Length: 316
Image (cartoon, rainbow, N blue to C red; front, side, top):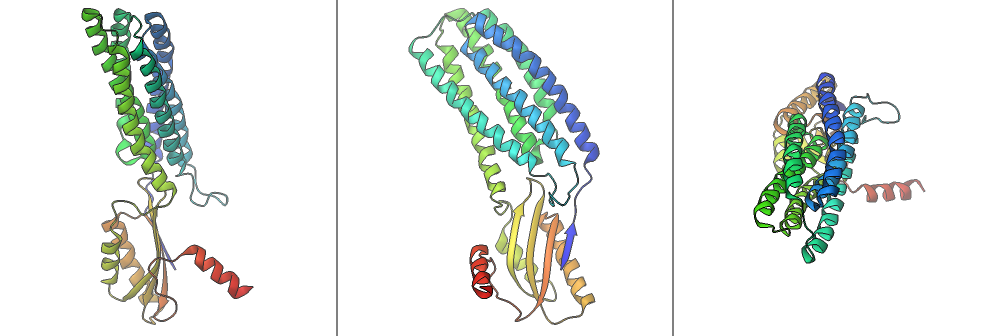
């Protein structure tokens, strides 16, 4: 049996990320208080909506900060895969809260569209402009690394939702100032809610995909198996499992059928397979078990439940 590990040393990167998250957390938390007060005094749903979204950003930033810190902890007897899934759980929480916020926005906006209250456009414009600058700055701090980290991307989308929210609030405030169209305030909130819901669904779907240990979407298993079968000495592949530990860390386990070869020849086959899986399919953790032809079944994907039942009947 062979193991291949290509885990990167991301301690320094994690420290930089946690510092940026901490700065973003402090700025966002301070502004939430300002925006709530402004929304109340200005009677603006758009500002209160953005304040609510900012408050969830405080939670999201705090959870993301903790998840990044936790992911650097080494594996141990109780957590043999380490804490890499912590970020996926945070992404799931963030996307769920985003969905709930969007639904709440739709409900409140509907009530205000029926009977639009008067909005203080000056407060809406002033606070919205300040919020836009703060949200854009914090989003920029979190963006680095979010392309390949679902945890950071869920937080980044939280913050980008705020950027869009505050930009919409400023635009609505300017139009209301000149036209007195107070219904624009809840309308902007609806548009913000749609944007939030769209992004939340993408993160929620991907989080569930990873937690269910589904095959990474970018991997074509048929192509992978064909490539492995072309390696000299490989006669078959079965009991294949490919899954993601987090968005960027993938794992694979498989039984490889070979001729009845020596240990050194088997080690050479394993090395060739590991190099292909690492460089062509970006799989960082592989577990390969070599078997000689005729030793076991040849099902490419094993049914774990059926295997368990068969084992119980055989030993019962």
